Length: 92
Image (cartoon, rainbow, N blue to C red; front, side, top):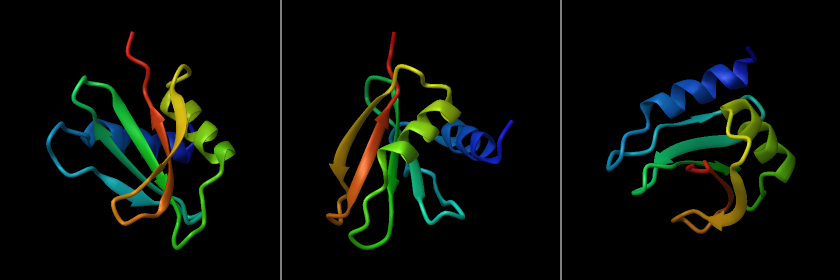
């Protein structure tokens, strides 16, 4: 099990609807937060500092490490206006 898989598993396990999203900054500088959406699906938010955008490849790696093979990846924006990528778990 990779270090990223362990970190994501910990964040995902701490995500509770209606509570602040648990987050961490990875050694690469990528900030990852996870929240639970109203329908029960979980969503990773990937951001970097300033105007730097996280790459789709980083989102794909996080999706795979989270075990969400059918997750969608889309561009978004944080409340502060920073670019981010959203990885949303598919609910079956």
